[in-house]
Length: 175
Image 1: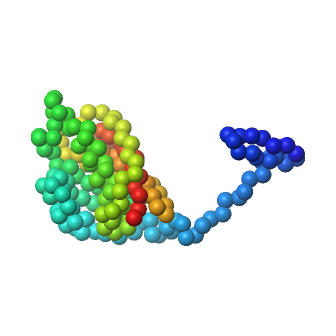
Image 2: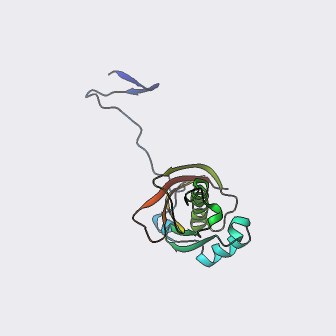
Image 3: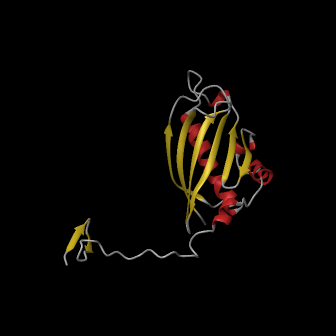
């Protein structure tokens, strides 16, 4: 028998060179069941009513939830010329805001209204210029752990769902 040093960890090998590793055991209390992951804890009207009282960006009526379907949420940012860059491009910070808001609201779908779920990490990739219409953000739950919630958000211009303008991965800390 020998041992192999892999990245500072020592793995002992058996006679045939197979590594003996501990077998991961499921922890039933850690993750929610599949049934729980497909049921929404909140309705579209409840989310929009909550957003109407939160802050200027959401109170202004520029953002609304259009659909909640299982663990997926659709958010619309209404086109506003005051949020444009020269050349008519929708500003990157606006798309970032849509991604963050959509991710935050995905937590609501999973947990109910949870204002203290805070952004832990957000990565965004701008895929093409966003020009000429409302931005539609579609958020999908990837995983809900004990303390962290993971999701992804794809954004496109209204009427052109096959041409995404940005994609984001989001992580939130659950209270």
